[in-house]
Length: 366
Figure 1: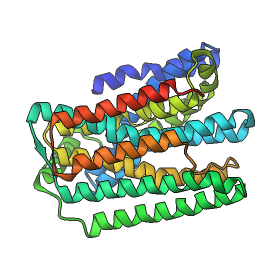
Figure 2 (figure 1 turned 180 degrees about the vertical axis):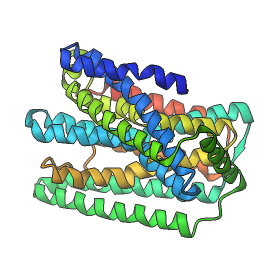
Figure 3 (figure 1 turned 180 degrees about the horizontal axis):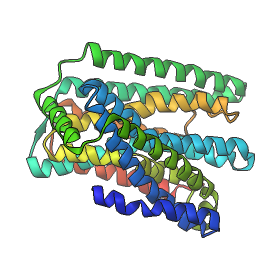
């Protein structure tokens, strides 16, 4: 994986050169996406090196937070571009909201599905703590309710008062961040003690960090450099969205649902699948469901407030197709987590649902 990341770094240079030399927008867009992948991987590695020095719980939170950093940067750049260019605002705002939906779908269907499928094929039936899985599933259902209420009520409210829809979104966003904060407090103070296999993972990661010889200063330096280059590539990627939409014929909506979440979260996705293959299904569930919760309960509300400050306010009003997909994805993930065990067939079922939803969004007219 390390050498793979090194090889993909060449696309960073190609994307930057293509942007300023006026190359094909499709080539620039594709290379920018590929360039984000190794940078996100280096961010993940640097985060792990820092996490093993902070303790397992704080380290896990750090991993989840910075694991979503690449996608957060892409969406903030898109919001800023929409604020500066009113003609592109509607499409880029659609891209931002679609990426929120796509991240949740990607984590609970694609990544969890791959993790359960590959882990089940290698290890047979895998077991995990029903209590924690149940808490995360309930939080996911709460998140979908929080996203669904402004969407369902917003259309009726907007017919009378558009400003009221923005106020509703801001109020819901504030409550969602509050609930996410309460979940962190619960995880640190009231959640059951960490299991032995997770402790072994933490020790192994600590030993790996010691052997790798990454100092805290080096890890922070890599984080800063990777973040700066991701921000640069994000600006290039967002700038090429409109020409790609015109030439290829896909919508900003489809790019946000499928491509942006995959590019932004690739490092975290790989880790989730790897630990499942190692028969650490509980840790894999924590990664996939935890990342979904952070996107829904923190990143989405944060973008609502950030967009307001940028002068390009977005609301938590999603279309009916996104809501149907989110409800279906969260329900099937919750059902799988209910019995505290998983098998490869359940992973295949999650992947089938993801493929069906992906095809539907691909053919959905703009």
